[in-house]
Length: 137
Image (tube, rainbow, N blue to C red):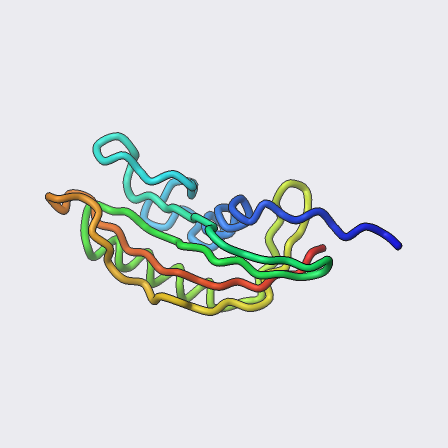
């Protein structure tokens, strides 16, 4: 019996997908797992953070928060809702670490909404939570 394909780095897969789907929209830089630092990190910025999941030898699922940070409500909201629209157009094939991962089902657990980030609202954050099913390739 052959071994199953190695489990993909889902955090990297999601950052790659955010970059592919958003294509630098409104100046979004490469997605990160880190939260941007106000006054230091260029805005707008994107964050993809995988925080739960399970897998068998052929398939699995994970939960990811995807957030967009911008200087205004309008830009952060638009980026988050645009990503949501594009992400829901699954399936997605994502190349990461020399492999291809098939994301074949996406469910929105928490719709894009504003989550307070700075006390003075100088940085606005819109975030959504998704459950994603994948197949190992």
